[in-house]
Length: 432
Image (cartoon, rainbow, N blue to C red):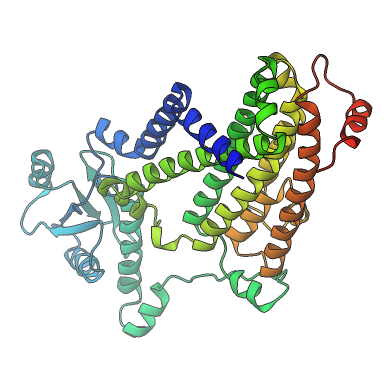
């Protein structure tokens, strides 16, 4: 056990100190930071959008031209004020004419003005919004909603009571419920569809699981093949057992992967908590508090188990290859298997209840990503999650035992890659 700990510590320190690890980690952290701040950079290059932008904390000031339709303008201003803290606000122009409002807009006193043009034969005026810069769609949609409410008040006048008007203008919220839930707990979780913020989290976790597993898996296989091709393995095998070597390398590189994930997680959290990025989340009605903690917890558990399943396979394949030039072709089947898992989850994220995703949730090579989609959507009952975890854990034991037999045999077999018949005969000579 001490020897395996030594191998683990040596592998971890050796990989962390390499230039490739440092450069890759720094470059990816920078790319993540740039990607998360793209909306803010766009606003800077555009001189800052009017309201609803990543940096727009102050509400948009919209002047109300009251030379015509004074009653409608006043109702509009009263309605907007009653809504509380809005991304925009109406400012009644008083005695100012349109030319004066244009001068105010050019001077930056207001961001634009709303003109209510009287149309012959129509009870409600035609609204026209003038602005010096483009106004965000969120603001124009909010103004249209205010106009619609005022229009209802103007058209019906005293026909409806204030309570009836309020009931009509209140948005209707749809609650979706799944009929595929197998128990009460799943049914309660299926009442809500995957929220946008959880959709983003699941999407990022799927990508993280795939890229991290592939990077660390190839790292394990290449290190074993490099030691074997340089004949260092013959020296190591005399002092450390093959099993201690294999699992020591797997755990050491797992620690490297967890360190890298921790760094990326800190970078993402730090960027999201920046004031201008929090404003962007608010603009898209995204709240960090809406993140389903179960997605994060189960994502970490399935990542760890998925890593060890693929890691033992990469280690077994790496032990059978004598030259690093042949490694890419040798690990191709494992790479294709991982790609299948990645694409099944990625293309099914918008339809978490399809049969393919349900079946994939119980196949050990695809379950880490497939079940994560269903957990994020709240359509995976607890028994399915636990069953998937159990199958994955048993698969790690089975393939770990098989990989240990292959590793112990393969590290001392040189020349061309052994056939399955040759490998099977050599494996029978060793007992784990």
